Amino acid sequence: MLGFLRQVGDYTRDTVDAARNIAQGLAVTFDHFQRRPVTVQYPYEKLIPSPRYRGRIHYEIDKCIACEVCVKVCPINLPIVDYEPGPSKKIAKVLRNYSIDFGVCIFCANCVEYCPTQCLSMTEEYELTSFDRHNLNYDSVALGRLPTTVSTDPSIRPLRELAELPKGELDPHNVPVNQPAYGPQPKQVLNPTMLS
Ligand code: SF4
Ligand code: SF4
Image (cartoon, rainbow, N blue to C red; front, side):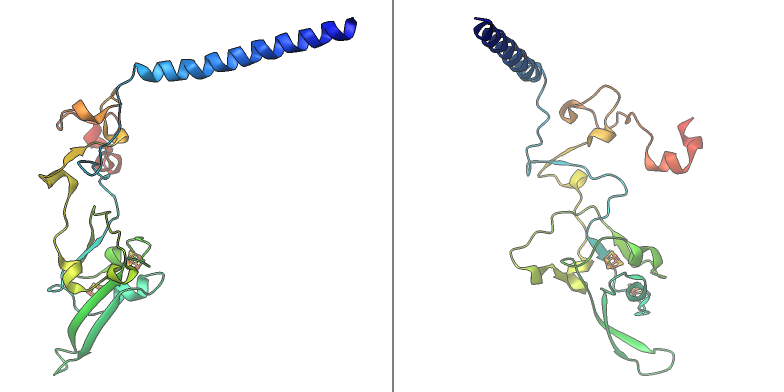
């Protein structure tokens, strides 16, 4: 008799535990019913990358002096500076091509930081996918293409990231572009006087 009562007690306790767990799970589900969706409808909507995002590298061949500093500071010696000896001492090198393989690049931006003529820059382009990895090897023409930006592309709707939203906002869809973000911007972190 005692064993039977113990079994009934265990069964009842398990039933109550299961009911409590189901109720907790449904509470989360019903809570989400009341929230607005924050899904980004990519590729018709895209999040604006943060101001210091390191995307595809842009290269200006007119400024390049073929010094190869970018190769020396690159952790994997990645940039290929293709030049031939120049006709005179004054023109020691004649640049023929320049390439970076984005299938290998780790986007550390060392080359951008150290280039003496500032002909390299990081862009906010992040859509570099390709069916063939060899297509990721960009030559000077591909690197020289002006970058597209999410905020200036008329075919898509740019949305601000969570960290860029005003206080209390979770859904970027209805936030005006000129409404300031809740947290400080990178420029304000570097120069705290801008916060006042
Ligand atoms: S560091 Fe700059 S100037 Fe020198 S080879 Fe590289 S891209 Fe050209
Ligand atoms: S971003 Fe870094 S890894 Fe890529 S080419 Fe420049 S230095 Fe090399």
